[in-house]
Image 1: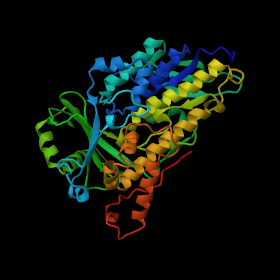
Image 2 (image 1 turned 135 degrees about the vertical axis):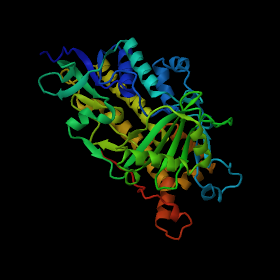
Image 3 (image 1 turned 90 degrees about the horizontal axis):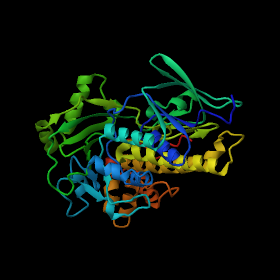
Image 4 (image 1 turned 30 degrees about the vertical axis):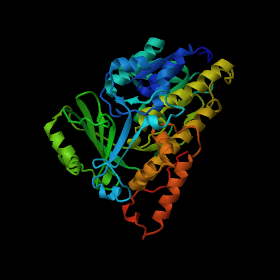
Length: 449
């Protein structure tokens, strides 16, 4: 087989946000690519709340108008509530009675943000729209096709082996992109995956129709409700005018193996927020409870000769700050830069991609996911510290910048350095007023690569 004549230049495993976004960028640059998606879209999927850093990708792909036409609720900010506001409000006068802290994205105009809002999305609809957009731009898309193996050879093009309806197919490409999400097909095949030794979070979630979100300015915000259990919280995300997503996230040790007990645990957690519990009991549950696990992991490397990992297939960070889709879209954007540049400059190694072609991508993604992870680690370690920094005018805008997803341009934002300094002081002083409020997760970031 002629190494200079693959069937497609790029083969993408997975048609979720990372895979479809990369396919769109490559198609815009007239680089042939094929997407193999195991499922038939639309598919139900968790991760319905976005951050403003996604807007830049939508604009570059001419997708913002499509998002508006879809009628997804606009997300102008986020709020965090306490199960006992006395914990948070004893240091602040004028604390709102029903939530500990909130932010608006338009307070900080970041380099990643195009507008003063982002979106809440029905992921089934959103993912299908992105994949269809890639196809319209020229990507070849196969759904209901399972990737069974990837083969690399020094003397031939990489090959992707697929199966559909008991029929197998072999496709040659110049570059394999793993965008398979948490299935991490290539990372698993190459033995690259490293389980996070710190975060071991589980979630149980569903949708409700008719939940009364009230009429305040914050009614369409993402809400995170703290729970009186270490490192545990409830998410509340608007999906439409009438539908709201709720999920409980906790550590594995709190999560029963029995389905009925897990559902009881969900309701017991919601009861710690009596107003929410009463409203949910009056609403209609639309879906059966679904569970998620393995919330954080990394890879030994993000790229190699003939392959690259994007989105959740490269790194999955606990999604408390809605980081998942943002990392997926932006990792695809950064990867596309290196891929397109290699073609435009003609600097492939005898027609093959090498790891050296993705040095910039790997550096940027490591930096961004490390910043996300450190922010989340510090947040879990001491929730009250987060609220203090948000209320502190010296740090508020820097925190909002992080929450907006603008995490890729600095090795370590100064606000993270300051947060870690204070957390360390509290950890080392058992007599500190806030010491008893420390969570049981370490403040040191997990860095697998």
